[in-house]
Amino acid sequence: MGSWYRILLCVAACATLLLPSLLLASEPLRVGVSFAIPPYVIEEEGRGIELDLMREAFRDSGYEPQFEYLPLERTFRMLESGKLDAIINVKPGMLHDVFLSQPVIAFHNRVFTLGKTHISTLDDMKTLRVSAFQRARQVLGGAFASMADQNPRYEEVAKQQGQVHRLMLGRVDAVILEQRVFYYYLAQLANSKYGAELYAPGRVRQYDLFAPTHYHFAFRQAAQQRWFDRRLDAMRADGRYQRIFARYGATP
Image (tube, rainbow, N blue to C red; front, side, top):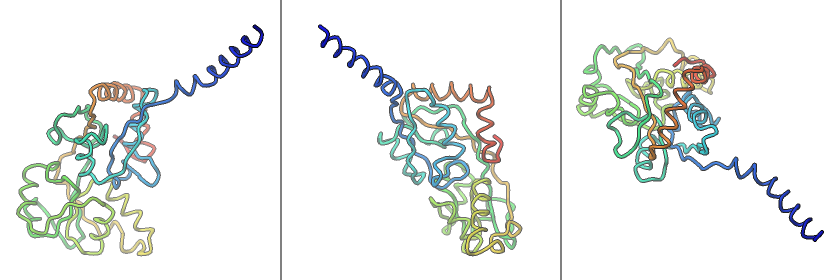
């Protein structure tokens, strides 16, 4: 009897030790994110405004966001094929058979040129060498898409730092990029071997031709989307949403 009692005590003790880890175990939530949009996503540091928002929203949810850094276009394909559970930065109409969150963030896309190039309207870019982010045609509206379709020197690229670098070297005439992303990379390049003179902000002209783009997050499961929306509402109400932006010197 005594030996059985001791065995039962050992089993109970082991169960007590294992229970917290079992309760804390979370199911992975595979989230596809663009790899080149700081301060929203900073791959080399595993953080950024949008990563922090997703992590905070799913804290204590039973899900643990696991971020996969990919070209934007590939995130869409992988979500549609079921290889991802969620992606960021989606507009209504860009995907089908997914569940969109409420608007999460506003991007301020701008046209950037060097001082010698002047732009007043979208039509002014029809003959220029224009480099835009992936899916810019769908994001920036019909008039922009029409310009892009008529311009044989228009391109969409995955790596935004390369866009800034090529503009400053004069290899493209205009870059379409989110404002914070552009200046983040410009400051980063100013500390490179090429130096601050080449990447001086004073060489750049900025044109505000687009309304803010309001992005949603997309989920394959409605329950995850509803959880995210509830938590995002709470984060906005108690100030956590605003504090996440403030970590990066930004405001919503």
